[in-house]
Length: 138
Image (cartoon, rainbow, N blue to C red; front, top):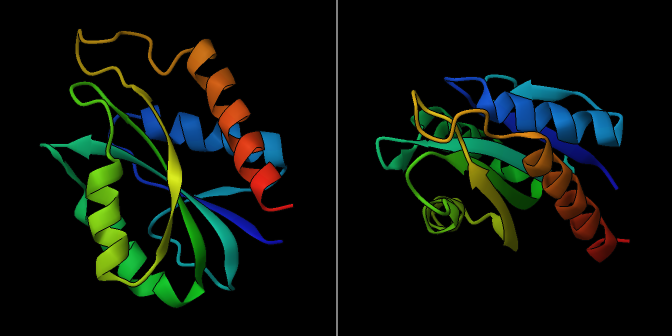
């Protein structure tokens, strides 16, 4: 099984999450500017919500790489919303990409809102989520 991790971040919160997954799995997390060079059975797409939407670079990455994405797994943070799943589902559907029904979402710090998030507890919960996803594919 091949696994890849891609992220987009403006504040560093999402990179922190992508790096935690990468360290746990012993692979490299790369920004969405780096296309997939081979088929990924599982792609953890780490993103944040900016201005109530998923950044266009994430949308463009999925469109460019759809042929190499087996199952897309949504991992996100945001200061103001509780989930980006519905937004990611629309992007996946538009590109005929399979999106796992489970997602991981946590609070992200922005200015004085949710300072320190994602924190150690958020990252611990993220790793438990990753392990749960991988159990489904073994």
